[in-house]
Length: 281
Image 1 (cartoon, rainbow, N blue to C red):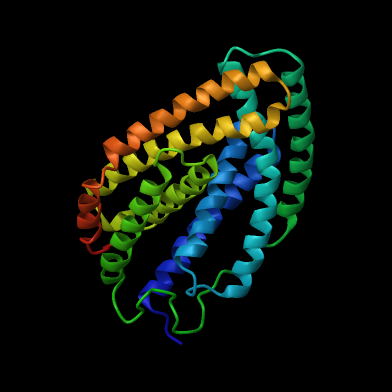
Image 2: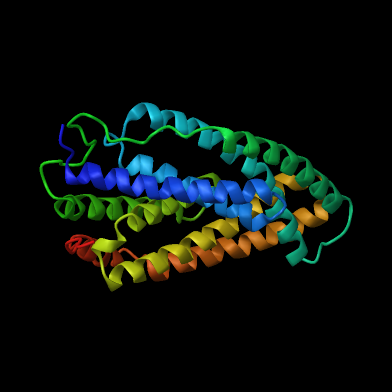
């Protein structure tokens, strides 16, 4: 069966993300003590996982299911290390560089890093299944009889509208940190989706991606505080310091959202997303 251009594009983009994951997997398995290596591996996993979501129905389901299961296991091990790194860094920034809590976190980090090292070595030895295109005519939202550009004109503006609606709900007064965490994940997925199609857009994509990165950074700063407070236990002093920082960071996020993602900005997003240029690569 002849593959549609969209199916070919899906396979190509997913393979690119898989290669990046393998590169970061090798590096992190050699340097589990390096926080940046762990962070980069987590980002590569998120990008690959988002590829699976974007092109669901266009890739063979068996290999995708197996890889997603294995990626979740790696992500869990990475998360245990990353959370300790975040907490230690945040405490140091807050002027807390010594004490029982810091020692406890360092020990916890060392233990988690050992487990991660063993897991990554096992994962490196395993073969990754071939990510071929699905042999069917279902695209799960993709119209395979139309060009990729025609699909983007419909799908991406709708995705932007959904993103704005979700963000508006997450920024209301009294929104829980759980809702902010869900929106943080939504922001990442939106940004990683746009990355897969940046070749179809010009300067507006650069500007939009920059605004999304700023939003993601502010949401990540909030999540860092929440994660740290969960690890602090009964350390009231540290909890109080981080809690104050959390309140400040939430305010910074809300201000950023109002300035960069006001309701009137949705028209700009939908406008340029509805005008993809033809891919000549």
